[in-house]
Amino acid sequence: MRRARVRSKRKRGSALYIGILFLLLLAGAAFLYTLPQFEKTPPQIVADSNIVVGADGSIDFQISDNYALKRVELLIKNGDKKRVLLDKPLAEGLKVSAIHLKLPKEIVATKNGEWSYEIVVTDRSLWNFFLGNRSHKKGVLYIDSVAPQIRVIAKSPAILKGGSALVIYKVDEEHLKESYIDIGQGRVFKAIPYKKEGVYVSLIAWPFNQEQFTPKIIAVDSAGNRASLPLSIRRNLKRYRVSYIAARDSFIDGKIAELASEYPQYANIKDRLERLRAINEELRLINEKLIHQYTKAVTPIGQKWEVHRLYPLHRAKRVSDFGVKRYYYYKRRENIVSTSYHLGYDLASIKHDKIYSSMPGVVVYAAPNGIYGNMIIIDHGLGLFTLYGHTSQMRFKANESVTADEVIGLTGKSGLALGDHLHFGVLVQGIEVYPLEWMNKKWINDYILSVFQKADIKLGYN
Image 1 (tube, one colour):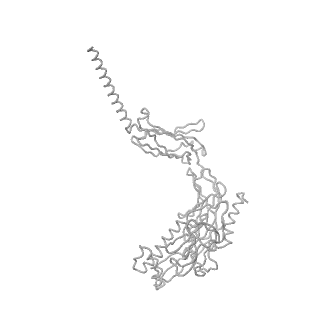
Image 2 (cartoon, rainbow, N blue to C red):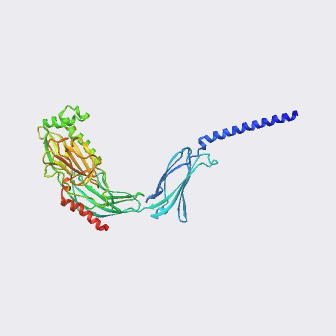
Image 3 (cartoon, rainbow, N blue to C red):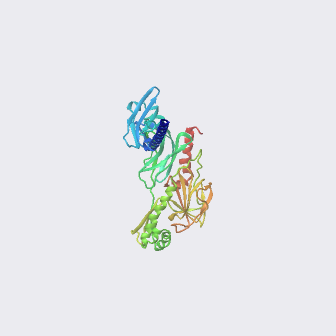
């Protein structure tokens, strides 16, 4: 009897011991389970599903892991051909790695080939029976070592220094990344698709204050292959005038002081000539920068662009030309105190005369802008914008549409204007151009409409 009780106690003690051991093991397992070494998050692979490789054979992708990377592999396959391009261990503790490698020359030599690829990445986690977490990324690898092919379909017969031109061209390239027209000195013009795949159209400009004009069409594919085609177009030179303007005390103490008072950085300038320079040069540059920001976009034009002669003010006379370099002098003509360029065409008729939008478009700006006063900017598509400054009334707000021959405002003398008139500007992708071209019906027909007509015939639309 006594022995039975002892055995029973021993059994209970063993059960208790086993239970405690089990709980300890369970707690230990739970503790290990929560350790970073046992994390279950697979590595990340950042790579395009379609990788296009150029003539240099370069491949780039990125891998990362929240704990630590262990190994990376890259395999490619084409039919029965298989190649292991990469299979290497990674340094301990590495969490992020940018992978750069080059294809073997014999593969790049295929020029235009297509392979499937698989990237495999393993981390250093002890999860999955100490094998770690693994990620796979599959996709297509295109070998493209041939540069895009460019040909001009139609273009304006010439371009004026300070003027505009239209270019329509075709790029033969399956993996085109970008295409544009470079005119030199860091200035480029965007091109947008036109009617058929691979066909592009762009309005370009030759800035009036840029001496060299060396336009070329650029095309770059996804593999980095680049093509450049010089644009053969006749260049017509134009000499822009200079004018000398007396900076009278009444002007400095009147309009200049009035504008300066609206800006804290200029309001307290005591020296009158310094105040003139600040408004005529510094504020002008700030105002022009705003204009350029609002006129850089290239809005698609659809199947047909509605182009009309620009005629913003009826029965008006010109009071100042475009591109004039103005020298402001104080008391003596040789005492030049400030200079600036006039970037529009000033027209005057009667006080508070009606201003018309000659082409349909969308108002992108309608608010005061420093020396330009109450200013309206309209986007007519294809990078063409018109600007109306010094207005006394603006009848449209930003984002509203206007039709052709619609009254958009009234002339005035807001901003840096001494008399009631309209400052009319035309811009192409943020570059001021010679307004008289766009006010000339024959020029529009010969340099714009006929280019579209020629292109449409070649493209089979006529």
